[in-house]
Length: 485
Image (cartoon, rainbow, N blue to C red):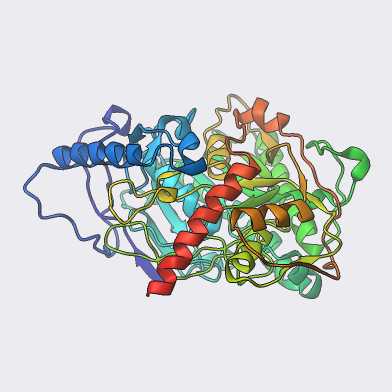
């Protein structure tokens, strides 16, 4: 097992809530530190950060009005409490800063969505420990403590339980994103999905239960909230119920959908069991049913899902090609279409193209102070990552609760329309062709987002059209960097 710990930047005796947003905090002393190459500048950290923030605002302002990107750029960027992601205030709206001692265990944190969640949590000051087997992503973050390659199906790979007097990392929240996600693969290999999506999730829940028992005995901090990734695949094809609400019955048509639905059942039973047993400080849980997640870092070489394409440099914003697989249903179709359009190859649609999907944006990574970063790098929104963190921080009083929310935009388009948009956005002469549909894919999908809006104050901030423009710009930039290496 390899481990990485974030650079230590602590300021003793100061709680996170007391920090100026331009100050960075970190209190990691365990395990070997992978150096981030700290600056040798004689400026104080605060002065350097203030200067960096000022440069960020000036750099961002240079790109306002740059094509369609300018309308979505907020000039005022706020430096992170931890990490390197600069965000505008509306981009972390309603996401509070971390309180003293709050720490998150993030399974699947090296993947497509998980890496964006880590960025947002760090920005708001949370300590983050990533548990990942590296099978689907390599988006390492030097400001997180990493437990790699650790597998959620292996009990001994989970973090140690706290004991009286030891310095074991303590946790207050868990985000569970690790999963196998290919609908088509699940049809051919259902055992894999049973072991990972159901069995692995069961081990995550059991670990939380045992962790809290040890924490109670040791006087340590307890886990109080679990958020896990479910999927819109559990609805299946139910055209009469569109747009889908959380109350719709199960209609999944793949082992992938089945394992995600039964994972929700595990979470519900866990919460009910605590309430029935009168457990002190019980854990509440939220399952988020993602629709079709897309955005930068998606892997066009994987036919089933989105992935990451990153080049790491000393200045943060460009990364080597690595791939992560976390998405639902046909999310990865956007990255496939973009690559085809960019290279002049046929844009191939599986089926007649009349299938409908609700595409929801993940976010764009930002590096506002480095001159190599372009206008597209300065454009950042986080829909899915923000939904996860809002659910994680949702206050619960009294008995533990279990909730389910759709994560979507509320607007669907056909795959044929998407293909046309991609051709236009890439100014491509590619032909649109059709092949036989893929087994296990649903025909129509549209979503009612009201549940998440009411329950966790989440509303999608980026339309599919704007998200596609930003993804296309990022994709062109990334392909250009790759061709120069």
